[in-house]
Length: 222
Image (cartoon, rainbow, N blue to C red):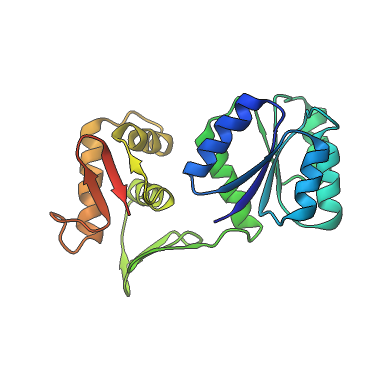
């Protein structure tokens, strides 16, 4: 599980984003100011730092400078500032990405995973029993056999992998497909995709081991 330090001085954003990142299988520590953030970094190794520019003491640029002076830990800036100066300053200091508030949480998670892969902080291999996803190559295998999936089927299966143990509602899954398809996807279409994936990965699609139906709530991959 990747270790993330979230540095943010807005308590509402801090609490909401921490809860969301934990549901996405990240381990999250928090800090609200520059001094607290630097103390955390001195005492613990992090895979990535999410860093607000405006802090209650100091600023995110100072924290980023301190991080990059002694390590290669990736940094993503979170800020309401979208002016060119702030963007250029952050990137010149070595920031790995920059996202402007307000942002969609799933967009942030996608950017986090992209940076982690690029910086070698995230394993490209995901496994569940004999089912395996090589995220670096976009390859799905079951045992020694490759499983051929469409782009949407692959994204949906990856979403289940990244949320193992959690019940995913149909609305959550529809939103995930919407993000990829860029067009309206209805409830019946989701049912078809779940059926197709089960036919490709399950020994007995009528009695699934991987993607299970939780009646009245949605689906879950254990």
